Each structure stands twice: as structure tokens, then as C-alpha cells.
Length: 411
Image (cartoon, one colour):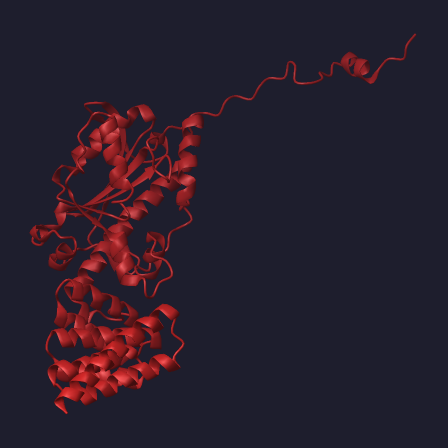
């Protein structure tokens, strides 16, 4: 008789082998968004969608400041080429941010969460519209349209490149009219780059809210790159609990946009009395005001930054801008003083400007020639890139030759 195997002995004892007969674990219980996030289902002409409303009182603090938008909007409106909005009430400005199914855009990308903030008589209201299922997209878009009905100016952060085109495409795909079409749009990202590129290593919203606004996100925060994956996992499991961090991320983005908008509006309204303004930020502001046509304010910002002290690379560039601004305004004495200071510091541009001044305004050709020669000497002794060396040599040599002919005629 063959020896009984171990498997036979285990079976005789009632031990079941493998997975046969083993009960499967129950599927995870669906936890709908309504049970995780305090919100409500709202009815639209296209069905239901989920919405959260949160209100922030006037004394709500976001980092080291509040959300109160009390400074005049005139210069912000000028920057946005929307002068007609200069006297509009703050309730006309809406702040929008989306969370999407992909970060690169494209025809298959949709917005599953749209956060919109606006000013009310009670303070600041934040509405978040959530798509529980992709089939709810028409309802979500309809709810967003209804909420934006009082909007005259949209404020985003990189929204011109991403959020607005994406939403416009989704409205078109659903056969609906986009409320964003033709709307005045203030995208804060280009402005942030203008204001802080000289000083800050990054101009992302997350970086600015810490460096400029003094706000730090809590442990609820989830990184933006992870959000699309989290939404698709929710669609598979129908467990909405992990999405609490996504709602927090979106809400914080909208609140930071509003706080940053308020800070920049105040900065543009009165840049000369802003406390603790970094000298490099003064330079950037000066350039912005110069482009807006506020030469006097720009000159004051340049002068104050020079007086407070700048790194050498920024010092000469700022001195050059200030000198050319003085030249344009006909303030020749101030311009001459700046050019002489820069020439003493080995700046070729100053020698060129001095040569121009003495040739064209004073008709002192010998003095103009002297400054041309001084410029050539600086070029010869400096370590300029080849293209710049050739440019300066060509300009100064040509000028010197012309001046010697003029000197010969006058002699």
C-alpha cells in the first residue's frame, strides 16, 4: 500500500488547500463625495452636479495679509489693457482655478473640479463645482456658467495658457456657449514674472504664496501632479475620501490668487510707500511703471533702489535705465551726472551717451571724441563676448571717424 501523501493527510483532517471554497473579501464600500465633503447637489438644465460654498469674513487672514481689496484698481486695469474696469466694484472680479484629468491639456483633458472665488458684501465667497462622473460634465459647465453671470473680469494664474482654453474647448465639445469667451482676463503669472524674476528663483503660485504672502499649506495639501491620478482612482473605487486633499489644494489656489491680486493691486496703487519692499523688486516695479508711462514714479523707484544699495550687475543696469529716462525727460544735468559715474565705473554705454551729448547738444566735437576713445579703451581692456565687442567697436569707431572729420572742418 502506497504511503499516504501530506496532501491526503491534510484533506483527511478537513484542511482546504488553495483558494477553492475560500470566501472573497467584500468589495470596498463606496463613499460618495457628499459623505466626505460638506456640500450639496444642485440642479441644472443638464442634471445634477456637486457644489461646495465657503465664505470667508473680511478679517480672514491668508498668510501675512487679508483678502480685502480696497486699493484703487486703476493701474492694474491699465496693465491689463482694461481701463474701463478701473472704477468697477471688486465684485466684478472672479478668481478661477481648475483641477483636470491631465496636466498637459489636449482634446481628452477635462476639468473635474472648478473653483471660483468672488467678493460679496459679507467678504469672500468660494464655490467649488465637482464632477462626480464624466457624464456630469454638461451639468458642471452649466453650473459654472450660472455662477459667472456677474463676472466682468477673470483672474487666474496661468489661466490664459491652460484653464481658459481648456474650459472653452469643453464648452464647445458639449455644444454650449462658453462664458469666458471675450471676457477680460488678468493672468497673474506673466505679471509675477515681471515683478519677481530678479529676486525669486521660482514664480509658481505655491512658491509666491510662501515667499510673498507668507502662507504655508497644511498637511492636507496634495501635489498637483498627483491629482489626475487621484481622480481616476476615485472613479474606479468610488471612495471619495482621498479627494479631500484635492479640494483643499484647489481652494488654497483660489484664495492665494485673490491674496496675490490684492497685494499687487496695492503695490501698483502706491509703490513708493510700500514697507519692506526689496530693492530688486523696486527695480522691477520701476520697469513696469516706465512701460505704463509713469516716468516720475519709475525714476523715484530707480533712485531709491540705487540709494539702498544693489549688487553691481543690477546697479549698472538700473543706473543706465534711470539715465535714459532722465534723457528722455530732458533732465540733462541728472543724466550727465549718472553717465559720468557709470563711465568712471567702466561702463561703455555711458561713454557712448556722453559722446552723443557733446556731439549733438553741445557741438563740442573734441570732448565727444575723447569719450569715444574712452569707450574704445574700455572695450579693449574688457572681457566682453565677441558679438558685444564687435558691436561696441563698430559703433565707437564709426563715431570717432565722423567726429574727426567734423573737427577737421571746424579747424
